Length: 131
Image (tube, rainbow, N blue to C red; front, side):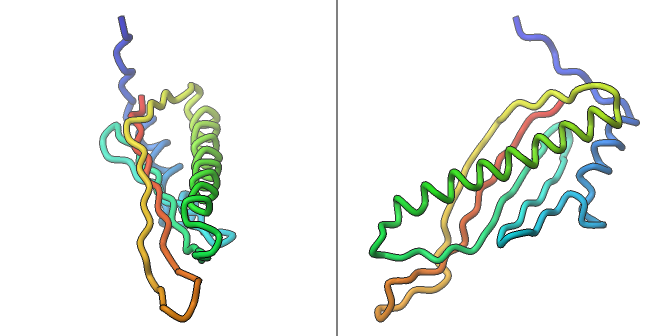
């Protein structure tokens, strides 16, 4: 039998909101060529990763995409661990996070017949249920 989700107090919602607040750049990470943004809607926490990638057709798109998958998962996990740590320090309790959805995609920005290089946006979005 699964235990019911703990309901956030008003103070805990404010704590989590402040941790995720991007108004002052705290929850929005834009470093080393990638960006991570966070948002909270009800008990759904969304983390979004985006970067511009230069793919070389000769190296194989599938192989290069796997590296982007690994890197995005690593960066998002690091961000999630920081959110958990900050919440625990400020609220005095651990936050429970359960993954609901995890998708990634590539969007072609530029490609020419004269060049093997293709420029794409790589994005990953993960949605968690928090309690």
